[in-house]
Length: 424
Image 1: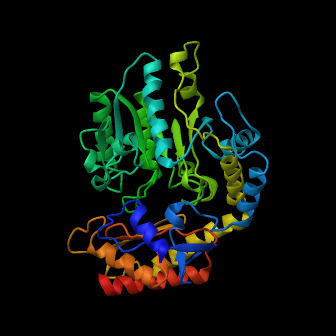
Image 2: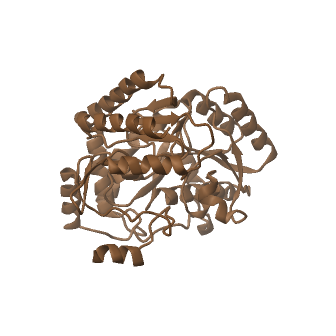
Image 3: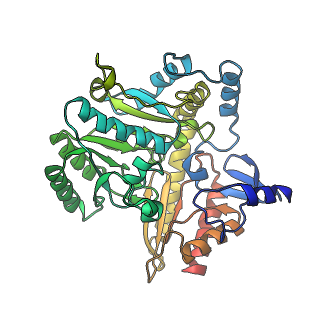
């Protein structure tokens, strides 16, 4: 009881209205896709704890590698120094990214990776003698909670309190089927009318918008338009990266390559906070100069933390292993089987699948807010039934750890259908 009182009186949880929220569930242990609370109740982590734990909780391989590094070199500053884990990580990661990606800048979370990318984009043009201060982003985007990342996000609930204090951003619709031409036309108009530094996007899947999906062919066209105007492109792969879309990275579906890529979340398998902003050599060269003022003056105390680098190395090794690749295919197959069974369900408007991501958009007579009654009822129903799912408005999405069992997947699917029948 004392622990609950301390939490209630002293801790501030994210995205929470503490006056009306239910007391948080105290999780004490995890293994694979399962978590247990203080009372011993078991939960299936159906969203990989906000998309960061693809290889499961308490992964022994990750823990062993991290433990070994902690006993060797837990941390050293990265300004003026380097270390083997960062070098090995670069050697391992860069071949998995688009061919043009040649430089890695380390930070500590997805929002900061985006912040770094935005600063790079602005200073890139400034270093080349042009002051450009406009960004282009998708409507309903979500790129994080720091100020630059908020500015290029489009979800009002997360940004409305800071309206008027953000960067200059032009928003265009995502090129969903039937809206490709509108998206391209609005992008071209913005590029013609504004001094645009960069176009930032979540490639193929907008996570916080309800797993909205669009085709790589449409994104290729948007990137090509930006290139024709010498505008940088930033791919935010914080959510989509490391296997979630069925490829190592969503950019793997593209023929046009972004100039900058943001990585975090599953980068370290849910162990140590770390992020990377990768760039092309062309971007880096704009900062490579005898003039000190053209350097990127950005950094963190924990930049390229050796322990985090080793966690990332181990995570990539797990991702590329045959069993994990087979798990990604297995989950995708299970999602498609569910879709074949329930695609015509009278209460389901649309089923969207890419890789291990499945979004179930529900038919509702009125618009449902991000934390509206339907969403809250669904969330509590799932919790009561031992499943961690966080619906977004009228969208239930499933994005499980790759190690989830078929039995747990079936329980998730069955419970989702029960919830739809009960609340929709």
